[in-house]
Image 1 (spheres, rainbow, N blue to C red):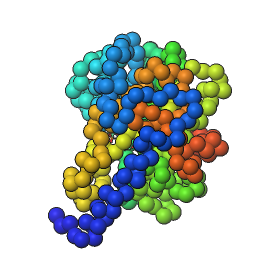
Image 2: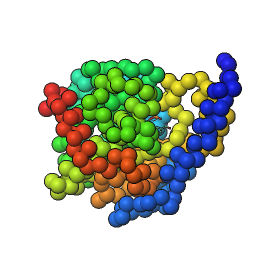
Image 3: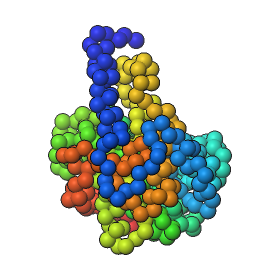
Image 4: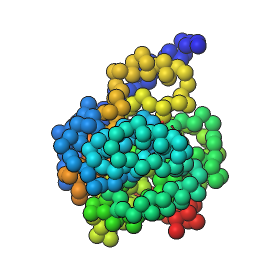
Length: 338
Ligand SMILES: NC(=O)c1ccc[n+]([C@@H]2O[C@H](COP(=O)([O-])OP(=O)(O)OC[C@H]3O[C@@H](n4cnc5c(N)ncnc54)[C@H](OP(=O)(O)O)[C@@H]3O)[C@@H](O)[C@H]2O)c1
């Protein structure tokens, strides 16, 4: 493998940019008023943030439970006594992941780019007949090198956002049947890479100016806007259910499978200076899904187990855009929502 001078300079540039990205998640960042702060931080693990909790009797669904952060999230929630429904792209993968962790788990097949499998999966979850205390929308893809489309739409948007939009909407009765159901959407600091205008409603097929990080950023902005609008709707209905989004940190997982080789080299060389471990990366998801202190907190964005006001001008708190995204997503998926 060759690693030329230009690539070295790009890698060095990434290192230089890392502290700037990370500074967004340091304490001292603006906090939304009224949302409880925790004593946890960037080095807290999923086990640490759930220590002492007894989740027996609760059922939590985790998407993408076969790898990386989702697998660790499932492991720790099951360790604390929750019944975890762990989804994988095939039943075999889901079974293997569930078998690799202790506790009570149920494997379910869910391929987010095939909407019929979401219908099948949610029908199955309904037949289990229990309320859902949590749905963690964790599965995701990043940085597809070339434009790929599903249903004529750009694939990051479909897998990361639309698939979860269908999933959660189909499970709303189960979530609302729980004493205090929670939807946790794994977004990313990559929201900052989204197009200047936010969601490009006139370019959802991704044909205009395809750029991998830009489209990943758009899908992660969509994740946060989805939870914002869901929270608004539940608040208006007087529901006890909550929805929040989060950035888990920067963690070396299979998410980088499409990265150029030099990025993997750079990660090995300098990743330790700014990256989290997988147990640390799963902490904020587990915290949002279980922390008793957050029972009434909804519509917020979290980093390092604490609420953060996202960067201004990046549409993360744009209520009008969130409502428009909900409307558009409903139009695009209506035949799968009923
Ligand atoms: N790692 C980071 O630094 C980082 C930073 C910010 C945000 N995030 C977010 O964290 C979440 C988890 O990512 P990770 O780092 O744990 O990555 P990962 O190890 O690649 O895990 C992603 C999971 O999503 C599943 N998945 C991918 N495409 C899918 C599809 N079409 N349908 C259903 N499931 C699918 C994967 O299954 P297969 O393995 O079978 O494909 C895998 O289980 C993602 O939403 C990501 O955007 C991660």
